[in-house]
Length: 436
Figure 1: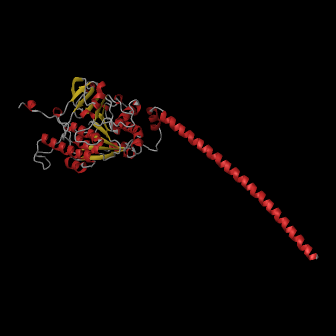
Figure 2 (figure 1 turned 180 degrees about the vertical axis):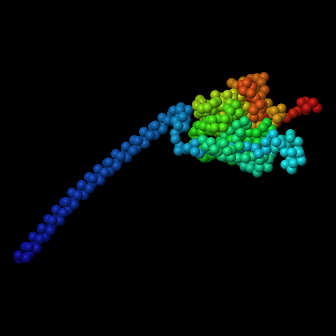
Figure 3 (figure 1 turned 135 degrees about the horizontal axis):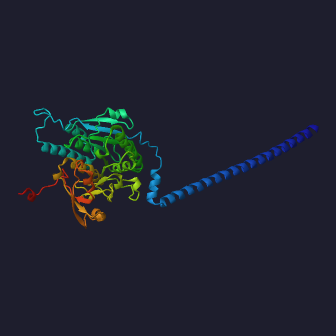
């Protein structure tokens, strides 16, 4: 009997202990639930704060979109995109191996049997045909052709490295030209394959021709590359100052030639040169997208040099539509070049026409008809000049033989129509002019 009582007591005690344990477990579970709920509430609050922050950011972006395009462009261009233009811009000097003052002796195996005029036209035709195929099909066909028709020395010149300049073939008594490629270009850009042979073969003398390679900046997407135009222009300005201070280059002997974005690089260089003032800029179809007319500090203007000449070939698509220089030439009303079926071809035609202008004799070049500057919009859109002037003007090749006074008299807007096959810039003489 006593044993049964003990067993009942033990069972009751165990039951009470279990109930107490269950009660504590329930309290612990309730505490965990409360803690989890608190954590969940905290997470929700943090998430809500994050959403609010993102909403605020979206509102800021919306405000940025509502800002004037020109102001937004300035903000973007001041943004550091981790691009070191000074370290990633390279300069190459190109000089002819055949001084014009020392022609090959008579009977030399290197002497061409054609007369000088025929040789010049033969070379011109080779380059123009090759570059026409390049413009039409996007193929670089000029490397081998260039080797066949010219011999030149190419040297790397480093900014601030006096030794590289001192030991080069740079001659401060020769005219100096700095050529600048555009978007997606590099040291082997088609503009260089076109203009280098033209300059090396000029009969007016020897040239120091520099090509600028800012390909590491230009290879980016178009928008990013456009932001890099300003720092590259500043580097080119430093290089001009370097040539002037270290080698005695005269500003009267210097011209900058820029294509597409490179035209704006040339303009920015003119703004930042410290040791003098640029005399001549030749701008070949300056790029339009992301370069606003109202923001003169960010693009090419006529104030960047004493004489700024612009050639337009793809207005409204790749190229700037408005007049930007002291003289603006609109080839074929500025767009849809003969033989071109897409905008890129018309854009690239600019440096081909310029290359022809360098080599064709002045009397054989097409002359542009003057048009009142305010009529530029009708000129480009309606392909018609409602108010012509009595002035006629050609691109006149390198302009080296023109004085600054003569350049100062070159002003206005001009349009001309080219041939539909190379040489595009050659003036076709009709029967009356021939006297037949």
